[in-house]
Image (cartoon, rainbow, N blue to C red; front, side, top):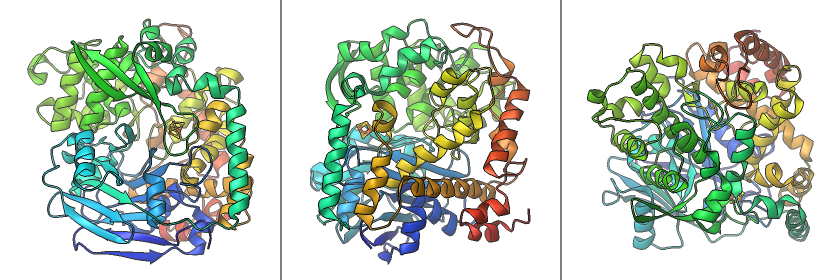
Length: 613
Ligand code: SF4
C-alpha cells in the first residue's frame, strides 16, 4: 500500500509498553486518514461508559495521506478523543510541523491509552519509543515547556505540549506546538493532562512511499504554481485570517459583548490592517505553506515588550470584540496569556465574556470573583484566565465552560451562555445568518466554524431566506472536514480560491487508490455520519435537543449595527433542523437512519447502535 507508512503506533501509559499494529487497506480506502482514522478508532475502541478523564479514554493523533508531501499547506495533523466539553466526539486540528514529522517517523496514527503514574513526555524517535519523566516540566507554561524539552533532548524534535490549564483539567484546554500553533478546540489538552502527558515529542527520518514519485512531484509543482498565481495570494497573505474582521463587522456579525450584538464600534483598532502596521514583525508558516497566515508580533503592554504569534481572527473576535478589548496590543497580550496557559482562545474568550455579563447582571459578585471586573478591561480578562487555568476561586466553575457554569449559576444565565452541545461558539454572530446558525447547531464537536463556514453564503443568498441553507451547510460539511482527513490546510481553497480538483488528481499518484475528488467527498460524508453516530452511542439522550442554540440567538433581535432589529425565530430554528435532518437521512430526532448508514458503508454502526428504523 503506497502513500501510507502501513502502521499505527499504540502507546500504553499504564504499562509503559508500546507496539505497532498494521494499517489495513480497508481502513485507508474507507476512512483515508487524519479525521477519518480518528473517528473510526474512537468509535471502535471506546465503550459508552468511558468518561473523558478516565484512564480508559484514548487520544488519537493522525496526519493524513497527503501530509508531509510536496504540495501547498500539507502540514495538518488531527487529534481526537471523547471530549470533556461535550461528553461526545471531540477533535481538533493543528498546523505546524508535527504532521510531517510523524509521517517521517513512520506512523499513520498514534494512539495514547492508559494513564502514566507521573508526568511524562511521550517521545517518538523513529522506532524508538520512550515514556520519559516530565516532572521538571509540569507546571511550566506551554512555550517554556516546548523550549525546555527541545533544549534538553534535541531541537530536531517536533514538540506538542499542554499548559497549566491542561494539567488542571480545564475543559477547553488546548495543545500547543511550534510556539504558537494549537489544537485549540474541544479540550483535548485536558484529556492529555488527565493522563499525565505533558508533551509529545516526535522525530523521524524515513521516506513516505509514493505510488508515482515523478507524477506526484509534477502535480505538486503545478499546485504551487497555481497558488502563486491566484489574485488572493498577495492580497490575503499580509493579514491572514485577521483580514476578515472588517467584513464581519460590516455585515453586523462580529461577536461583541458576549454576543449581545454583532457590531463593535472600535473594530478598526483591532483589525488586520492595524495588526499588520502596529505589531506584526514577520510572517510565520506551517509546513510547506506558501500563504503564511501566522503573524509573529512584537506588542507592548504596560511598557513591557511581548512576543507572540497572532492574534488571528478568532482571537480578535472572541477576546477582542466579545470582551470589548479595543487595543491591538492588549489583544496580543491576552493572546499570549491564553497561549501560555494552554487555554483555547475561542472558548476562553466566550467564558470570560460570559463571566463579565454575569458580573454586570449581579449573578456573580466582587466577593465571588475577588475583585471588580468589567468589559473592556484587559486586566480583568487576564485575571480571570489565570484563575481558570489554576481552577482557583471562581476559576474552578468557569473552567467547566459556559454550559455547566450557567447550569450551576442559574438565574436565566443559560440564555446568554453561548454554546451548542457544551462547546462555545466561534467568532461569527449567527442570529441573522441562518446557514451559519445551522452550521453551529449541527457540527459534530459543538459550535465550531471549521466544519462549515457558511456566513458568506448567508449574505450572498439572502438572510431572510431559509430555503437552500441546509444544502449549502451539508456541502461544506463534506468539503471542509475532508481537508482534515487528507492532512491538509483548507485555507488555500477558502481564502485564495485554490482548485479542489487538483487534490483529487494528486491523491491516486500518492496512494495508488483510484479515487477522484467526488469519491473523496463520498468518504467525508461517511465520516460525518460516523461522528454523529459516536454522539448517539456516547451521550445519553442525544438528539435534536443537543442541536439547539442558546436563547439569545432566537429570542433577542440584533440590538445595533447594520442588521439592527433582525434575527431568526424559534420556528426558523425548528424549520432549519427539520430540513437538515431530512436531507441528511436522519430521523426527526436527529438520529441517522439505518438505511442511511448502510448506504454509506456503515453497517457496523447499525449493529452497534441496534437501530431498527
Ligand atoms: Fe498554516 Fe495558515 Fe498556511 Fe494554513 S494557511 S498551512 S494555518 S500557515
